[in-house]
Image 1 (tube, rainbow, N blue to C red):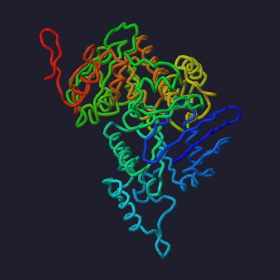
Image 2: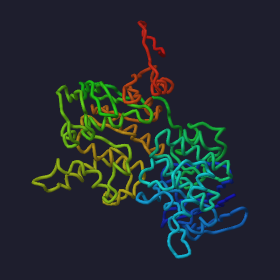
Image 3: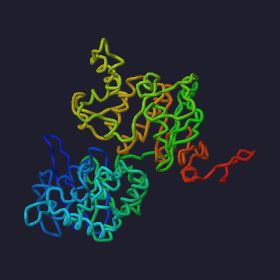
Image 4: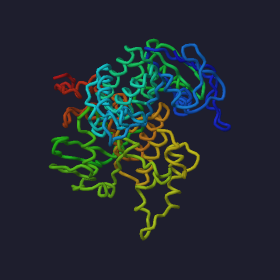
Length: 504
């Protein structure tokens, strides 16, 4: 059992943790939730030996202990699996498992066979079906998470801290990681689960702890509360979960596609979207929605069919052409595809428009600064200075900067692929409000999301895809989780002459 009592921590004049007391037992999965800046990471970095607390005590099985380094924390049985996984893609699994503590034979050479066999033992113990010789780069995101977990178990971890482990995972990948977590729980391992996804907290956790403004404001059993309760504890007020309302004024058609197909990802797709409309597209793993809109954006190849922009047929063969046609695309994986981590905030916010406002090849930085100044207010971006590193921002503010990048081009059509991925409750509501305002300003918005609730709250109507085809359209009374899941798994909705919807 780990107990952290009356933990205090300040950075300069900023008091980040204020008398926080929490505990975690072996064999339980406990959620640690709160908005960005609530103090979650600082608290766990103290437990993980990264930061030293100013005041407070840590007890391990009743014995007072203090960690001065991550190695001391790990040696005490506490493993911290960070959101940014510490794996090397160009090494096989077994070498990653022993990174920094490689096994050697009597001659001082790496004992590869021993490392492979020890890795196989751990995999067998936890029930993981993986070949230790496989290169990490060939694993999907969920198996990379599982390799990190297995490495923690190999190092005799009895408590594992998991920081946003599902942010970049698909639904089947999430379930794979959850099954792994349940197995660890059965083996007596305690897990601290940090997540912004409240539905996941409800599914996998037994207990919850909520931080707000550096204080522990609520804790208890998950079975006694609802996702709405958790959201309220996090932000301090009720968060609405019903459909958002706005002034709808749909204009002319912006995009229409007719029977477009890809060699493998999608087939015979037809739909349209109008000015001021928020169109949702959802489904399950492998439904083809990302590839579909990447093709419309010029990133994937369309093998057949037609694309019309403002009623005129267009043959978009590159992303540059798509930008010229007024199309913006916010990608699904922000850290890999949305931001450039070596650039500062304003550079990330303006890079897409450098060519638009350049004169004779010279970038007009003053023009970009003027545009970004307006976007800071309109998008409510919280930061200290536009010239700070993009990595200094929270996930929600990074996402707003990526939005600012595309809005600097004044798009007529904006495609948002998982726009609230990895952001907290308050930032998610901010982004929803921004999207509504974009639509009110006559921008056509397409939202791609795996979260049915997001589609229901935000969109005027939605297409549900299944195996690369549009399986059906939902709106009004049919836009609910039941109908969306029914279509996403291959079902059909039929409408009789009286307008009544039924399952086929």
